[in-house]
Amino acid sequence: MQRVIAEIGGRLQELDLPGPAEQIWSGVQWGRFEVPLTPAFWVSQAWMSGSGSEMDHRLGASLTEEIVFCLLGGHGTPAEVGVAASKRVCAALSARGSSAAFPQHELEMLLREPLLVRGRAVRYRFAAQRARYLAAALVQVAELNDAALDDVELRGALCALPGIGPKTASWIVRNRRCSDKVAILDIHIVRACVAMGVFPRDSNPATRYYDLERRFLQFCEATWSRASVMDAVMWTTMRRLSRALLRQLLGSFEGSVGAGGLH
Image (cartoon, rainbow, N blue to C red; front, side, top):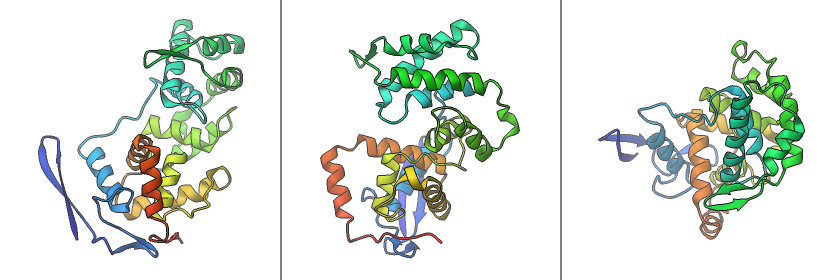
């Protein structure tokens, strides 16, 4: 057994984990909690981040705004740029009083204007494409009764909107509902799960999203972790690691942790 001690909510708390050599399932050991990228490391980090209070993942004040943030912050867009662009669009939506008929050309104009990010002007790369997707999605989401849908059903309904695939739809659902029924499998989560042996090394969410999601959710269940918290902690931590350190850490796992498998 290994014991993690942390100050949470102003007092010391303890988390007991299995020993480093014990297996979560065949081929995947817990590892030491103080060693980055081991299962024990992620479980302890998620525990420290999500213990004692509900994490608020929301970026927007409504489902419509969450769609704006997640669609504009999608693949190829740095997080800070996506947030800046989304805040501008959401302010325009609020000023109009209705989002269902926002002309595509007006959205594109908003996205083409330089954004101030960390004190410098930057341009949004996908202004035309994402303006087209967003204009159509805003019309269709106005007809969506999300209160009648569970988390997975809502994810499916969002996947039917223009420009929204499983990752973006899962991101919206996780943010709005703190859902533990879906997972946001971007490159950071995939790399972390490959390092642990939870995902095979050739994992590609573009072709195996739901299978990999199942593996991730089963890992969280097996380690008594909330998927919504684990996902957020992995994304934040992996994103902050330097490329050189990340290469070193990922390389150290080659040959030492099997590909593992869930059955």
